[in-house]
Length: 149
Image (tube, rainbow, N blue to C red; front, side, top):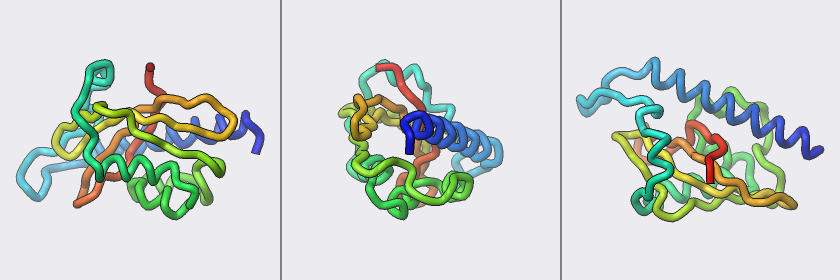
């Protein structure tokens, strides 16, 4: 796949994930625990310029799996809505990996964001904001957008 097509595919993935976040935020009601739901947008992006908390291992594992070499592992950490919107196959070229930035964890209820480095073969590492939600006992990726370093 050409570099330009890779950039376009990643941009498309980011846009689709952002749409899913908006859809989830608009359609959510009260949770089973009686707390009102919060949209992922309520975790302020301005907090990304501030030091956050240490990233919980379970959330770091989710981000790591997003950059896995296995398409099935990549998709297992996406919300079902995001996975259904994306074309079949791997989200990233072979050799890609993601690593969370230490102390970049910000959480509000069942929504969170974290900074992570996306490293693709032959390219400089790129910093991304990864949005997560926890509908059950695990964190799932709702969006990924480029972040300011």
